Every structure is written in C-alpha cells, then in structure tokens.
Image 1 (tube, helix red, strand yellow):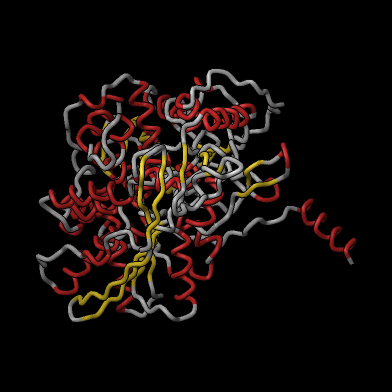
Image 2 (cartoon, one colour):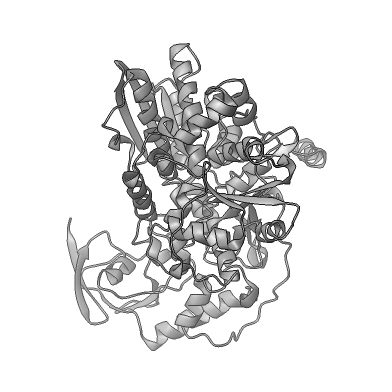
Length: 597
C-alpha cells in the first residue's frame, strides 16, 4: 500500500495513505485522548478530545477523522491543544451528573480517567443540568440520561454491529437525548438486551439492572438453599476485574470466591451445556431423519431468540425448542437436585452468573417455569460478581483453586467451548458424529467452525451423510444469513447463531474495557483462547460422555427429547410486535392522517 511521510511531535513516521492522524500517532506510541471514538464503529470526531495542531491549518483538527498527508507536521501537545481539550471536556462535564463516588462506573469510567489525565481540577462552566427520569423498567438494561455524554458509541454499535438501531439521538439542542423511538422505555422497545451498548458506553449512562442486593438477601435468608451456576465465558474474563491480563482463565479462583460468598453449592453451567447437546443433537437428528423443519437453528442465546421473535418471526419454527443451558440447569436444580438431597424445591434459590445481560430477561420469561416454580431466580453479570467479591473484601488474586461441587459441577470439554462463537456447533458435531457413525471418533477438533469470521460454513461427513452447517455471530451477520435462508439460497441442516459478535465471551455483562484497549486487542480472540485451552485440558471432551448427565437420564429424565425432557428442558417462542401502538398513540396517528388528508 502507498505510504506517506509526516512528522508528529518531532518524530518522523511513514504510514499507509489511508491512515488517520490518530492511527499514525498510535503507531509511534503517542497517546492522543479520545472519548467518542471506536475504531471502525464510531469515527465521527464529535467529542473534540482528539484535537491536534497541523502546521498551516487555520484551526485545530480532530485527529480521529483527519487523513494523513505527505509532509504534514503535527503537534499534539501544544498549550493551545491542551487548553482547548480541557475546555471541551469541561463543557461535557458541565451537563454531566458528577456523583462519581456513588456511580456504577467509579474507578472504571473513561470520562473520569480523561478528567484525571487532562488535569481537570474544576469545572468553570455550569450547565442547567435538569434531572431527567431514569429508565429502569426492563429486566436487563438501565438507561440514565443524566450520565450520557452524547458520544454516540451505543448508537453506532446498535446500528452497525447489531443492525437493530433501537437507540438513536432524539429531540434537539440542550434536550438531545439517546433513547429508543417515541420516548419508549427500553422495556417497550424492540431491544434484544444484548448489552453491547453497555460494553461500549464510556460512562454509566447504560448499565445492567443489578441483582446484587437480591442475591445478598437470599444468601442471608435461612429459609433459602442458595446455589449458583457459572457460565463458561465468565471464567475467561472475571480476572480482568482484578487486574489480570485479558483472557486469563480463572476457573478455580472463581469457584473458591463463590464458596466464600456463602453459596451452598457451586455448579457449572457447562453441565447443562452438555445436557443441551444431548437434547439439541437428538432434536437435530430427528429433524434430519424424519423430515422436520430445516435448517434447525440454535436457541442458546436469548438475545438472538428475541431478535428472531421481533425481526424474523417466520423462522421461529426453525429454532430448536431447547431452553438455553442457563434455564436447563435451573430446571434440573429445581427438580432433580431437591429430589437427590431431600429438599423442598420451593426453598432452592438458583443464582446464575452470566456474561450476558439478556439472560436477566430470559430468566423472567413466563415460559421459564414449571408448576409455578421459576427455573432461575436471579442473574448476575460477570461485573456484578466482581463487585460482590470486592464488597466481601475477598482478595481474589490470592485465592487458591478449588473445584465445582459434585454432579452438577461435572462437565466435558464440549461444554466449556459453548462460550465462544462456533463452540455450540463443534460440541454438537462431536456428539452427532459419534451417534451417526456408531464409533468413538478420535478426531474431534472441528476447526472449520472456529474463529471470528462473520460467517463460517462447513460440510461434515457424518456416518456417510453430508451435514451442512453454518455459524454466525452478531445479529447483523445473522440477518444477512437469514435473508439467504428465506430466499432459498442457503441450504443448511444446522445453523448456530450467537447474539453478540464473538459469542458469550464478549457478552454485554462482561468486564468493560477502555476504547483504546478495544482498538488494539481483539477481546473475542483472547477470551476464546481460555475456553479452548480448558477444553484441551479435559479428559472427556464429548457431551454424551458426561457420566453425570447419563445418570440424570437414567434416574430422572428417561431419554433425550422424551416426555420428561420436553416438560422441563424445552420451550416455545412467540412473535413480538415492533413498537406496538397503544390506544392513545393510535388516535394520534389517525388524527395526523386525517389532518394531512
């Protein structure tokens, strides 16, 4: 690629012609501050934090959008630049709710860090700061407009990565707000609660709805038998909350911390991932062999399920009827577990630790219960668990490793890779391959479905039959594939869809990472490595080889896809209306139409 030569802060550099000044500065280790910028997602120059001085230019320029040019001479640290950045930051702070000590993001806020880095000791400007209502009606996401800095990151990720556009700039001038259309609550918007907006928000304008106090209360309630399950992706990211490198696997320390918090038993959702493969694999084989609806599409990701319900209801029959591993685990912990331990099912309180904000809404779905007993009682994100560990004054980094509790803590390598895009597909193939061939196959690493390509395809010969599979992640990529399916241009037997790009490892409940780190490290890759590492270390790596799962069928469920399994482990999905109008809104629309006519 053609290169250009320029000078930044007296350092000569040669960079590709398509670079911005920000790219070039980072190439030589010069850190230009940013707030609204997200590489390849939100490059709009709105916050004016990245201003630089270009020799010969009349005004300061936003380095994140200004292209490099041959012979440019750039200064990033002149008095004019520093003062202008501070002034711009003070203007942002003037309309920001600055209760930092009580803020959910205290100590991990990009605006707070920027204020410290730019040496802002006071705010000369004071805005009117009207108090706007906080939207906390949904089970998953809280939107606080008083914290919003109008950077547009959430708008961009919702539109460009997820292809949904639930959030956008509304109103005008000082009244400008980022919100769903029609002044709707997040609870009434066609939001899938993936939480990607939360992961990119630099402040606490968007956060999960916390279950921390509910869990503390349950742990101190002597009438409750409180157990916890942890999703596979949590172990790949929890360490980041305690200063560890991205992608550090902390399975043993996590279990020890949960035991010290006071849970009666610590179980692994990987057990239910293995159980899911038994149910889902059997369902797939039945559809293939008996003319069922194909392609069958996975139903593990609640964000993806909501997306299908809102935007592709015509494909709901293609979804597997299986509940997600979280809900399957809850169902057996409220049925077989009490039977094993002579407990009243109503006394068992199931807590899930998930990398996903949509799991909170999933657990509250009307269908996720049996005989009036909910599968899962409370859902914590990875971030919430870290807050509880810190609140309990547990020194996480010094903890010894311990193991999950018996039976429901047993899992295989296939269960642990569920947290990465392609993991569900690979786990399913490992089991289906053995069933169709009647052999215990040694080659089980199906690398064709691994990685972060938007679409991964493979044709697998299983017992002499060609099975065509596809893997997509992120709902925008899913939409592109589903359009091909609808048009009859994609001929697959099985499709895995994850609601978030990268899968659960980069779910909306995972640790928040500053934008300049996100721009240089692919979180999807680094966190997934931890899961594949654990898979490789496991003695048993196929779901149907999980002896505890086999015992569950022998003693309780009967057989995969049997009557008992369908009663506890399967569900159904419902078409959802996008912004349905209430009677008052209908009248407004009718009045406007009459006036226009």
